Image 1 (cartoon, rainbow, N blue to C red):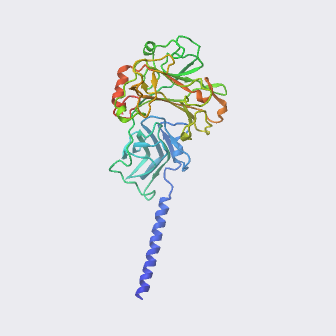
Image 2 (image 1 turned 45 degrees about the vertical axis):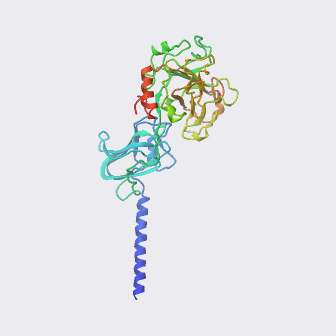
Image 3 (image 1 turned 30 degrees about the vertical axis):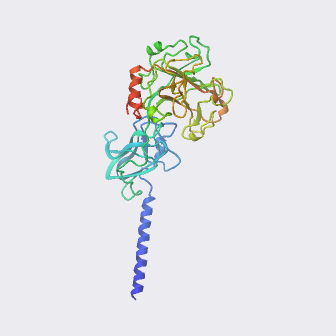
Length: 425
C-alpha cells in the first residue's frame, strides 16, 4: 500500500510539473504587446522602416542612419502595462542604450540602461510601469553603420522570456576604435581634376565632388581655405572627389558619403605616433586607367547589409531594397617632405607588415572613403566616367585647419578613441 501511494504521488507531481511547463511555454510563446503597433524612428536608412521592427517578421528590420544618438519608439495608443523588452539586434548593434517610457511622447523616464553590450538577442526586465510610449534610445554604435533591429519586442506581466541579468563586468572583449570622421554630401559635378590636371578646366573625365563647395580645376589650398563646405563638421574644408557613376547613362550620386580617419593598419605602438595629415597634402588612391581588376584596384564594391563579406573589385548585383556601396582606403605612410609628386602617388605608401616603409617613415591617419549609391539590380547598366568598377579611384585635397586636424589626432587617433564628426568621443 505504501509503495502504491508513493507512485501515485509521483505521478501527480509529474502531472503538475507538466502543467507548469505548459504554462511557462505558453507565456514564452505569447506575442509581444508591441507587435503591430505604431512605430517611429529618429531616422531610416535604405528603406528599412521603423514598422519592420514590430511586425513579428524575423526577416525584416529597422536601420538608422550612421550617427549617434538614434531611437526607435512604439506607440500603444493608450496607457499600457509593461515590464520587459527583447531586442533582436542585426549585426549593426548598439553598445550602449537606454529603455525609456513616456505618457506624452515628449517627457521620457529611463527604466533601464545598458553599456558594453555585444549585440545578439538581449532580454531586459524592469520595474512594472504603465505608459503609452516606450523607446530604445541608443547612444553608441558598434560599427560604422547605424543601428539595426530585427525586432523590438515589448511584453507585459506574464509574457516574454526570462530577463538577461545586468552584467557587472563587460561581456566579451572590448573593441577599441581609433577614429574620427567627416560626413560630406555631394556638392557638384565637373570634368575637372585639380590634382591630375591643375588649371586645365574640362581636361578630365566627369568627377563628383564632396565637401568643399568651390572645388574646380584651379583650386589651391588657399582657395579651399577661403571657401565653404557642406561637411559635418563644416570646419573640414577639404575636397574629396571620385569618378561619376552612371546608371543607364544617367548620373547617380551617393546618398551617404562618409570619410573616416582611422588609426588602424599599423601596430599599436605606431598608432601612438601618428602625425596629423599636413595641410595641402594631395592623395590619389586607385587606378583610373585599369583595364582589368589587378593589384592597383583598391576600391571594393558590395551591397549594403546584403553581401559585405563578398566584396568585389567590380560592380555587384545588389538585391532590391539594398544599396550599392564602395569602400576605398587611401595610403597612410607619407615621405615626410612632399605634399604631391609627379605621379601623384609616390609621396605616399601603404604599410608593409603593419609598419611604414623606411622610404615613407611618417604614419598619418588612414582615410577610408565609404560611398553608398541608391542603386540595385543588373550591374551591366552601371559604369563610371572612368570605366568599369575596377577603375574606381578617390582624390583627396587636405584643407583641414591645422589646429582641428591636430586636436583630432591627439584626442582620437593616438589614444585609440572612437570620435564623432565633432572630434569628441
